Length: 270
Image 1: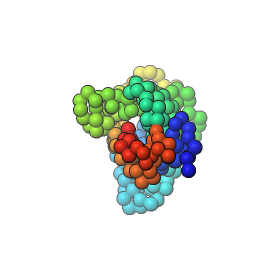
Image 2: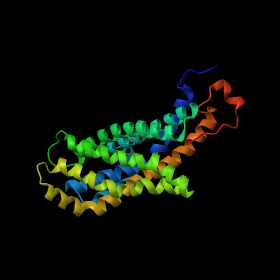
Image 3: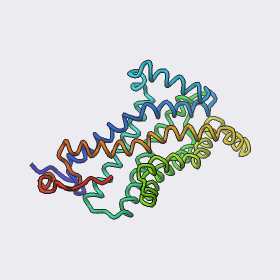
Image 4: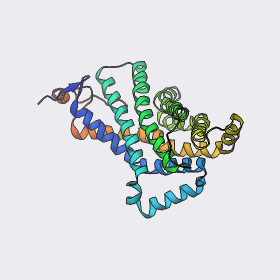
């Protein structure tokens, strides 16, 4: 039977793309949750970066089943599951439409950044309330805007800059690992400013600059540690899992189910 299509892609291919995305995200979500928690607790003064990381990793090793079921881990699974669903669906649609490299990059940045920003900002608002200081209160618009700029830079580095650098250097895997990580040295001050705006409302610019200067290096390194699995390793895992799942299911993005047998050489682009 011919399956229904949307934008030239079978419904079954969309389902396989979603399954691959959430499988891939599950491999990195607990680690990212522990690092995110540590960054927020360190910025708020509730715990040092090292103490928070040690506590999370101790639980990850001693009680992994409890750690992965914590709200923080589940939220991160949802954030990156949703992000890579968007990545995979855009890839399938671009394959079906024979999109140019420019069209593919524009769609990935527009769609993936919108999805990732929405999910990440929702998560960040929850983390700021869960692990920040004082009574839970609404997250101010400047903090949300800072988180949005931070995430846009990371998405751009991972899905637009990394393929370009990989094509120029002939090292696509290395570029995928390096580009989003390197971007954290640019975005860390923006991230810290957003957190400090929530934790210490009403501070002067000089006070915020002093805080960012004090926390910059360790926060940038910590964010490198959480971005490496999220946007360096996970895209590589997702590409492999996606190809494997489509092979198992007999679904090739861009082709209707009746065409699969007649196009065995069709490749899955990432």
